[in-house]
Length: 374
Image (cartoon, rainbow, N blue to C red; front, top):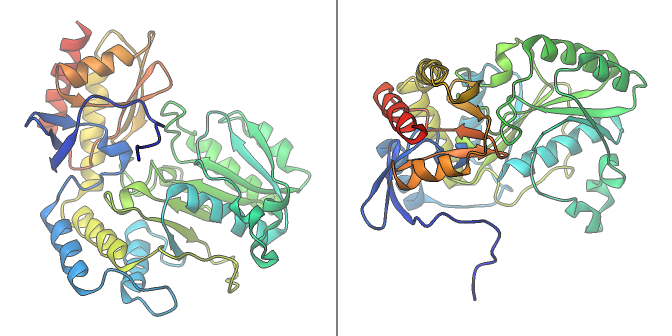
């Protein structure tokens, strides 16, 4: 049997990592400014993370969600305190797309509506409505029966108000910072107006913080720059530092109904051990603060490079837009200067490094980038 070919692959086989560096099977070291697509939050193979996972694997790797899991309880309490949402509840699952699917379902169960507003260039996952082929009416929300999606321009508050005015929209879903869409930020004033418009019309506001959350923006969640509180927040990627995990933060206005939501692997013992270790390191090593400081330094330095048309982002979620395709730039960074980066579309180089990126490593990247561009 062979792998099903779904990704164009770089001719590099990564076998080891430490902090913000990875090594290939030939012993070549690379600076990782991609973080495995924003997944690596505390750095590769952090000793505390490795120890906690190994200890948990030696005790119990998995048991079903039909029994109390003290690690889930601890994680909910710790995460609520870390992000400032102590009064929210936590539903643990496995992937970002799954978190968004469950957020939309919960919103639809709550208000009985089936229309959703999203924004141009948005990316929220790849899953489809598997529930439609499941013979269990209890888990079928109105949104599953006939989802209608309206895409609006980002930061156009008047368009939002017009669309929400009939009071038939189930939910508005928006990224804290658009990642795949080119590292584009919703304006703080727009988010405040969006929050008010949703409140006025009984529309659920869902903040997708899967890529922009967990400290990457220099705040725990990117939307917190605006001061709003969404009804639902989805998290993944950085929550497990590579262990597959996601979560849905649920505001107090939602009622829990047994059987509507469920999961087999979500919140398993190993996943919770990984997530708790991530919170330990984020807090002890002040990684949210580091993301803010080093990210700002990195963006300021990139703004001094003439060939870069625009620099966008917050913290260590950065988009460098060029007037030309960036494919060759990315390849030269990888194969000549041994730096991993990402892209958004054809003209944006995307930087998503681990939150432990040092000032010296950021300065090293600037030198390498200038060399490639010259």
